[in-house]
Length: 113
Length: 116
Image (tube, rainbow over all chains, first blue to last red; front, top):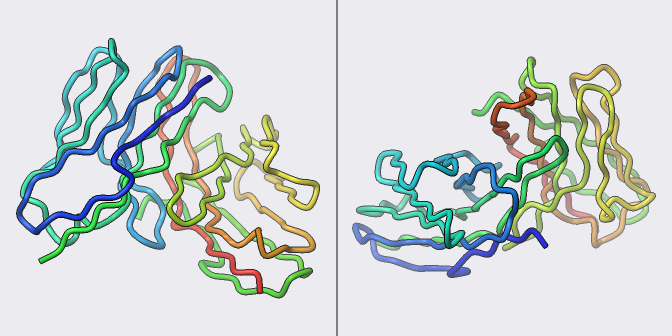
């Protein structure tokens, strides 16, 4: 069964600290993996996209890693800011022509001053 | 702003009433998706269109739900005889699907529904 699991479910960190969010998946055949940031009451916005051959990708203070062998991804946030408070959703796409997007339940991050 | 718009942004209705939401995708995108999201959860797939054809519907989409994309551009999602359990954020996403290329979804801001 194609599934995406994220951990932790929620996280509270101090402003300026780093944190790492985890995503494990069983989606097959794998196409790509995306991390989205979703502010409260808004739609998700893409942060990074990684294909099978990529094992790291950065977008400013966000760095995503992918281990296609273990089917794990992480999103590392460096020097957190209050504006990083949001839900972070991992989405894995399977190869195919139909609806092939599988969503995790998200990690809720709160950055406190 | 991703280029995908949804209206209304918020809707409060009484149980039993019908509601309709609209999604305007990025103009050249051929695929349009509807999702439902409740608090603390990831988006749950409801249905998707390729051009005007509705290609897949989730079991979550009961008989009270209907979606259309009549001209392959904007789409509407209607909920008839709303129930309190329908209270959620309804998200729309669009994408450009080419045969062998990656498909990236762009999400709208969502419509938050509250059924009293």
